[in-house]
Image (cartoon, rainbow, N blue to C red; front, side, top):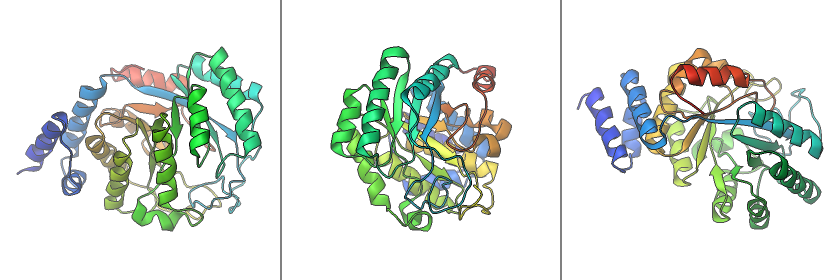
Length: 323
């Protein structure tokens, strides 16, 4: 079967509710017909998600001093990355940023903190802050606080948190190359706790960390097994002082191929363009939103900047989509 016919055949299968095998996904990833791959990923996206793009803003509400040694992360206490470090921000500051997110056109606001797991004092303050946001800002609240217990996840659910972010980061076969202080199973455990307690799960990863294309597929299949409502696709932005500071950049085509094939694996999820899209994709962000992606983070990330909401909303409008 020719590449063109194979891609269309797999598209029809996905639209009919059938799964794609690893071998089939690998053939999709390595196709020379990237145009048809992108078009078919877009067909799947539109079939299950219509023309809406989910727009999110996030806040790094507690920066640095993380006790984990993830080799991509400038917030790790193991590395001298010279980022701006600060403790948990006051409630009024976080509330103000949530209001800015709402006014900027975001449909959700994610409160992110660099913890292994949140200390009890900080967790209680975060819970009070969530209540304040719920009372004063009409926006969905998502959080990312590191490892969860059932009790903490249940508490967040009771406060009205919509979605919890906990990325797998890298394929299980590659994970020990990028982190030694915890393992892949630890991340899977928190993701499952989140699902068990009724929160929506946001779970993605980072590509371009030196992994093989097959390991990008492996990561995609692991994420898909959790049935997450949202999957952020981050493309490594090398950070000064980290072990991955000098790693070569991933090719644009490889990033687009990964996004497109992950759409075949997860036809109904919000597949969100996240960290690194401005650096690596540049104007190809438009292509990615027509090649499987249907969400983006706007206004910047944890320790690096990003596009303004106005610029991103204009891009969405120009390609015939809407938030």
